[in-house]
Length: 114
Image (cartoon, rainbow, N blue to C red; front, top):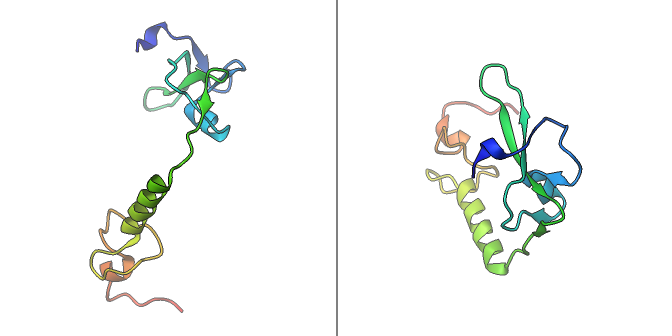
């Protein structure tokens, strides 16, 4: 996709009828294979601008319904992310990748405040 030929709009100034992927998702839609029609740019001070691609809302398709198999796979993946590899317990939260284990296993000598 050649981004040089796309119309560029400033942040919050895109015309009606265009939306980003997130905005489409909030409406229960997906791009559905259509090409990007424009982009919006948000200026940043230290790096280049933040860019978001825009799609036509009238060409967007409804989001596909989640199947039972996909729901089961997602539940299994989330369970794996919550299970501590050291103590094998469900931590009740997603295990931080920086620690690689639940907080009690990472800091066994720390006492919890009551």
